[in-house]
Image (tube, rainbow, N blue to C red; front, top):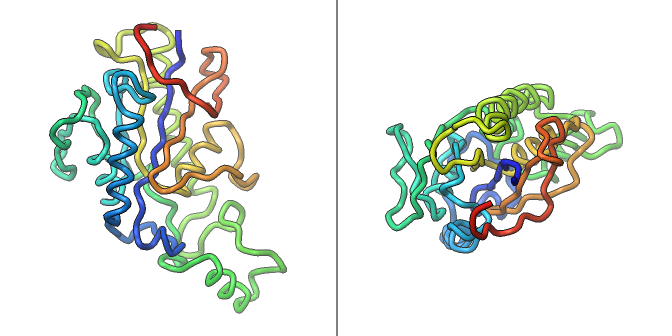
Length: 246
C-alpha cells in the first residue's frame, strides 16, 4: 500500500517572478507564458495514469492570492468549489471529488517592507541601515521587517501540517473510510518561499537551517512518508506515475 502524499505546486510565472521582485500580498496575474506552462503541467502530471490522480485527492488547499487560484484553475482537475471566492473548474478536467479550501495558512511569506523589491535591492537597503553585519539577507534567518519572521511562518505551517496529517493522512494510513475512491492525497497550490518552508517543516527541519532546494514557477513537488509511518515524514525525490489498483 502506498503512503498518502502532499503535492505542492507553485503558481505559474508572473512579471514579478521573472524580475525577482518579492511578491506576497500584491495580486499579480500570470503571464501568458505562465498560463501555457501550467496547462502543460496539468496535461503531463494530472490524470488517472499520471503522478497526480484526481480521484485519489482528499482535499485541495489554495492560497488566497489570485495567481495561485488561477494556477489551480488551469490544472487538469475538475475540483469541487463551494466558495464564491474561487472560480469554477475549467471544463474538460478530470473529475475530482475533493473540496477546495482557500486558507491564509498557505499564503506567501509576508515580505512587509521588502514587498515588490529584489534581493540585491534588499541587501543595499539593509547595508544602509547597518543591518547586514557583513552578511547578505537570508529570509530563513532574518525574516522581513514589517512582515513575517521565521517563527511566524513556522507557526502557521505547523498548524496546517498537523491538520493534514490528522484529518487526511492518518485516517488513510489506518484504513478509515475517508470517502469512496479517496486515498488521502492532498494538493496545495501556493507560492515559492512558503512552499519551500512547508517542505522544510514537513521534514521536521528548522527554517534557519535554510532549504537548499528550489521550486520553479509552475513547479511540482511531492512529500510523503517513509515505511508507511506517519511519524517518518519524508521528501519524495521521485514519484512514479499511477498504474492500475494498488
